Image (spheres, helix red, strand yellow):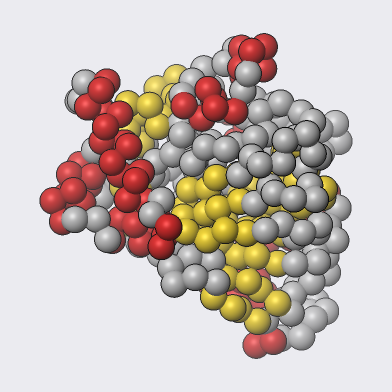
Length: 302
């Protein structure tokens, strides 16, 4: 692709906290970007886990074109697909169903292959509220007490779409429709990042039980690990503006959409890059326990 902007050395990267998040300047994602610029953004994403770009006036075609520079895209959602004519898009609209997402989660971990990267473009902001918080699960893992880290390395956790996240974000008929199709996958509690080699905690609101432990003991283990992950020093909080684009490494983060804008309109548009099958410290991959994800992963070849 022909370069149409300044070289990558003009990209600004400003760290936002000590452990996670960086704001990017000097990049217009609506225009074709050089390979060097994309490489710079990818390095920043892998290092800081979530990157923030203001003033990106993207439509469906330009968001897809930009995100595809980071890998093959999935369908918009394994249950809902995407809007008509926009199969790779997930609309996050407060007027729709199940868009509160006010629970710590990593996207779609009930699948064998959760997305690698997520690209969320803000279209409508409430006048007040609606921030999103991310935490760095790689640094959280590195700061666990040694004995707990050793235990986490050996744990296998079952993730399901019938879990706490669903209870917190879907009500009544919407919950029933969301659970018409059941998905479960068994993941290592600690995954090894395919690109960076870092170890990170694979947790979140879809985590339901720990293999080999009683239901109560498993929930206690998940809760304990999550409490370490979401300590404030491991987090960054973003106040959205219209046309913000936020990209996060779904392989090394949890996030939480703060639901403090009751009755106000909030809408974002997300596309996701397909991810690898997570692999644990011992080399054992994740496995499907329930559900057929072939329709979702077919987006990888579109």
